[in-house]
Amino acid sequence: SQQGEEDPQALSIQEGENATMNCSYKTSINNLQWYRQNSGRGLVHLILIRSNEREKHSGRLRVTLDTSKKSSSLLITASRAADTASYFCATENNFNKFYFGSGTKLNVKP
Amino acid sequence: EAGVAQSPRYKIIEKRQSVAFWCNPISGHATLYWYQQILGQGPKLLIQFQNNGVVDDSQLPKDRFSAERLKGVDSTLKIQPAKLEDSAVYLCASSSLQGTGTQYFGPGTRLLVL
Image (cartoon, rainbow over all chains, first blue to last red):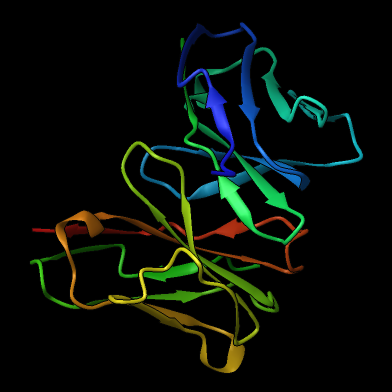
């Protein structure tokens, strides 16, 4: 399977702490994207990092990509209760095909 | 800018019945995706359209699932006949560039097959 796999499957932290989620994949990619899904809702795009980029920032989000290890990480700094959601990585391969991972369920306790 | 619209939001049917879902993408978006998301799992791509042509339907169970995107705008996904294992959320997404753009998701249709 070319799907990205997130780690950990679940993460529980206190408000104000940082949350780190990892994604591993198996084949060459064009880009990797991170999405958030609140319970019962559709997915919301957070950030896209291309295969020739190593790090990207957006507000409290920091994404890294290591193509040699076929892995990416998403860091959420100074987490808030509103960050409670499931986070998915999605990879687009060289044939423009998308694969989502199984997600990390983040719980931020107030 | 209006988002991706989907209907219905919820559907309950019995196995062997038929069901259809509708999606209206963001205006001007050429690429449309249908995903199946089973509870506790990530979305699985069923079919991808570029305008009204199919780009990828390799994971679409073609014996029971069909999809069309007439006129390259809105799309319909049909299941006939439904099985218990089809219970899932069906998500529609669109993007403005094939393969390199952000995907915008609709709220999904939650299907329960009894």
